[in-house]
Image 1 (cartoon, rainbow, N blue to C red):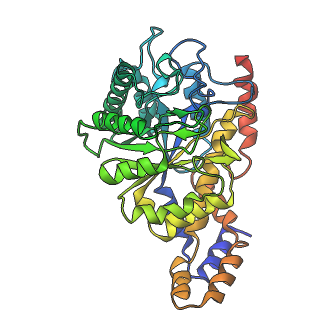
Image 2 (cartoon, helix red, strand yellow):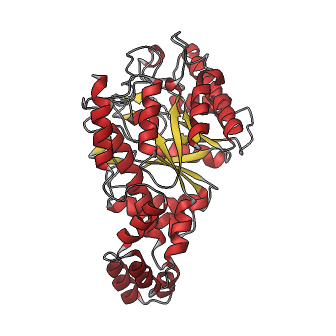
Length: 415
């Protein structure tokens, strides 16, 4: 079936594919830099930042070892992706010129190369403090540490990260979203659950004290149900951060789709939260049994999230970023597959006759609702996706060949 045939079929149920494609082109997706080098960063030569709830598995050849290699790999991935994008950086991906700079001393100048990269590729930048894999995180606590000296160190890091994010927003003319996630917690059951959360609240208040114009930066906080070394208690739970953002509405809550109990559905939290919050940040991931950060696939939950965002006209209230790190497969393929699947899910949702289905539901015509939603599953949205790729001058489905060629010509030579 051609695109024109698919266009006519969708028109028969009241869906304008051209409007769907236009809407899809307006959505920005942020690529996470840490997929390209297994969360190693560039603080020291040959460094690895695994730890503090972070662990990458696999040893596929060709990971990026320098900033220039990572930028080259990101450019290759971007060349295979339709639509608008940003790159999401961690603070550990600084350019320190080969001279170690600790995290409480980082400055905008250490990320000037990333601003140049973003300008060259016409993209924006997002940011994250790196609250893990450091001598001041060895006991599992950072911004909620009982040691005031350690806590002050990390608070200063957070303040400096916000300064850098503001710099990104001003330089690029695109707002930066800065996401705060810390792995703080206990491996075994604690006696005192309140005191660490009190300290976390106070640290956040101090880090967010300086007002920053929202056109340059918006802060967000990310929860986790448990992590490596914090299996029994995580200070920054979902309830804590949701409460914090309700009290401090300038800060967004982050929903990482892998940071909840296996039976929880993040898609079901969206409408409940956005009745009270003005905006959300999504870290799209895929848990397998636990928060194992697998490459995003075109699964039911991803499609349900996209449906919730589109059917309730919430796309203007969400920021979409990816968060996974798989070292067992080609890292560029991991980026491309995850982003394309996320955008495909959004397109599929944009091709639903939402108004008609809502009307049937409101009138109690549940037969029509069920039948049409089932029939839609076999509608040719793939033809509409292929048309979108053609218009964006990227491969439709045969992009892996280009990745394999890049692997042979570039990645293989890094070993």
